[in-house]
Length: 62
Image (cartoon, rainbow, N blue to C red):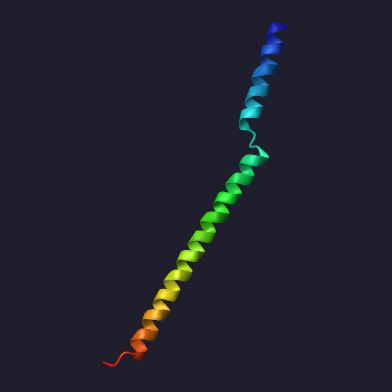
């Protein structure tokens, strides 16, 4: 009986350890979303900087 109880406890411990909670998944998804947003914002800033440089070069007499 003790062996059966021990096996059940061990199996339960492994199953709980391997499960990802909904809160953990939500936190991971939110972090990934923030990273994606930061990358898009950085790309937009670089594009704006290049556009500004191009417009300055276009009006600057050479």
